[in-house]
Length: 254
Length: 357
Image (tube, rainbow over all chains, first blue to last red; front, side):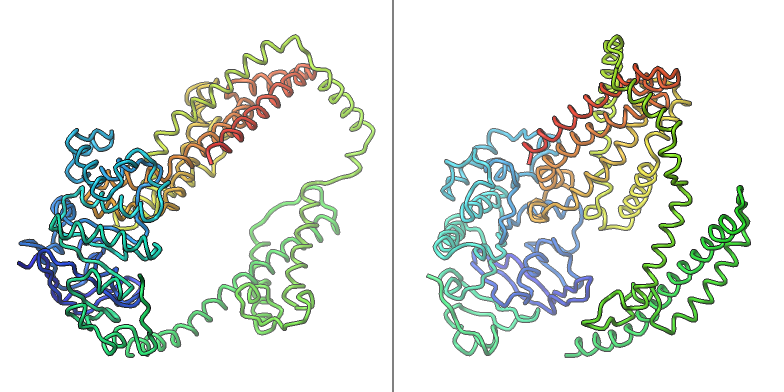
């Protein structure tokens, strides 16, 4: 079943940069779709256009039965809460505990006055601890989030996204600021929630070796256009050079 | 390919326009500098020194003639390298390896500076003769002797007034915090730039705050002493208003300096804008806010002593009264108490702020 569909997406930034032009893609439920491409090819913009962090200029984004690009205010927040997102820089709230950070994932379903006072229900707190257990960080629940290592912070961010009870998880270069072994650990957690919790994942990545290990399907962008769609094992030397340029040499990450 | 072509063409078209604009601005600077110099030379050189006039009148025709003359010279010089304005806008290429002081524009600039310095000495009536005159030195000796022999009999009274000053400053700061806290969000560019309406609110608020801040607390104290009567309340109101304006500016600058990441993450969870601010913005600004606020209290105590001079209550008012009666020994005591409070506040606020970092 098609969960998410983008039609003729175009995005031009106010400074004149055309980040996306005529993008068409669809995502099936349960997929682990990986988006690859050089820096500046429009990967991050594509993810941010899906949940409307950046509004698109033209085209349409269908998420289940909704047109996301036409939603505003409350309705948009409602749909955003069903799309989790993690970032290259983790983007946790500094000076707050890990548990508070995970609970922030439930903001959309908490009355404003309660969230301002930090009054989360017993059920929400138990849920947060359960998600921390999934990413193996239950023992760090009351530690300040900015005292954790990079890999741990990203796992907290995953738990925060899970707290939204999402249909889709958008991951914007989740391992680009991590070392190789931590990268694999974070990717394994993403794989776990994809396979065990049935969350569809759309993930931006740099390294082809990671792509081959984790992706169920690949979409390659170049200069804001889709240049390749298909299975990860079908990316050969020729495709690699099309996507990354003639000069590129593949490096692997183990 | 099309894109790069068109941007290059655009650049080629805008370059002469930019150069043209810069030359006009450079000319304006030159006109201002030259007409200013003529006016100063006429007033100071001709009227004050040559004619030795005691009382110098002002008429509008003088600046007008200076402006005409300045415009003429600036127009002529705009074809040469001797133009300060052109140097400011980078329209003159300085030769490499050659001393900057040999460039005509730099020499001219220094000349303008020298003229201003001489005019400044004249206008401030700087006079070594008066500074070292016999009567002057006797007066200095009298006041310093009295100040150095403070009257300890009024210590109790002075301390009581000082307490009033510190409380006044504290209440002004405490009441300013919540107001500035709310206003700061509306005065932060990064939060308000997204729609025309919010940007208009931002611009108006910024303007009002700048206006309030540019009027000294001393003046506000005078205004409020007419409004609510002479006493600590008028002084408190003056400090409150000034603190709101200053803290709003400092707070909003802090909001503008936050990292966007947490804000973006909170937005992506589907949080309400109020929740985004509370979870994405506030945790990043709490410590700098505390630091600024304590610093502000420190400043307010210092200002409160001065505000007392115009009837704002506290130790300043006491100082003014004794100074009016020429009771210099009492004034000496008050000066010591004021210095002690200011030093204490300064020390405490620096210590606390160092721990907050």
